[in-house]
Length: 255
Ligand code: NAD
Image 1 (tube, protein in one colour):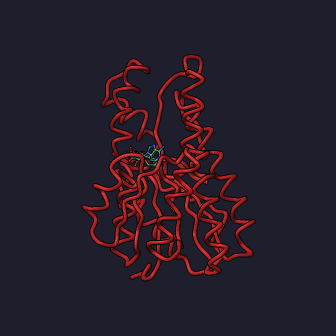
Image 2: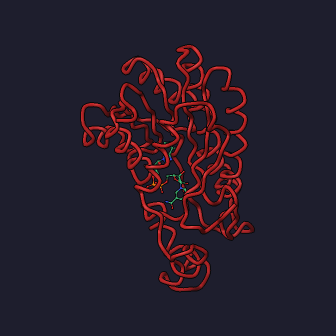
């Protein structure tokens, strides 16, 4: 058990990657707050007594501060934050509404900032260090057409992680970014027909010629692949691993 006694907060944990990470952390002995704008209580109830549902819109300062305060009170602190909540909007930049651009940056960047700030305040006060993990993407390193705000926000998370690594070091807090390739979650299932429509190709072609084209083996990354990497970052024993971003994508992007 690699996370015995640890308390983790995972945003966007009612679905997809966040839920898989929450399950992995629970199986390794952590107590885990399932923070989500919808379905948090139901997801936590299905995950057992060490999961706590925390309804939270990560773009809302009050909801984030109150939600994290609740977790800290209930579980006596916080050791790991996985800032994971996210959405995708597919559109050519020239057709993108300003409101959609702002909404995307708010969920991915304001959400990361607000949850990080609330957790860092607690981690500094506790004096037992901590691990901040951001859900980036291959799109933290690469661009694909139709994803302007997503690519912009995901690149921004790498900057934030480097900053938190530097400021957090004196308090034993490290920060890292997970950069997955395509994983078949609801977020991806939704965009397959959208990309097919915008690119004028079939859904099978979107999978083969867009999503998996540059992988080494034509395979999707799995929920467990990403959850294993989250566990690795969460359980790493020292500040040696900080300010890093690691791609898990079947070789789609190599550095
Ligand atoms: P998902 O749609 O299955 O889950 C996203 C979760 O975030 C949902 O439960 C949703 O309710 C929640 N959420 C959305 N807006 C929120 C808000 N304002 N406040 C709180 N919660 C909110 O999607 P997923 O694929 O699991 O995506 C999770 C993260 O992984 C996202 O940041 C996404 O960009 C990233 N990611 C996904 C893939 C992939 O292929 N699936 C690849 C790289 C990165």
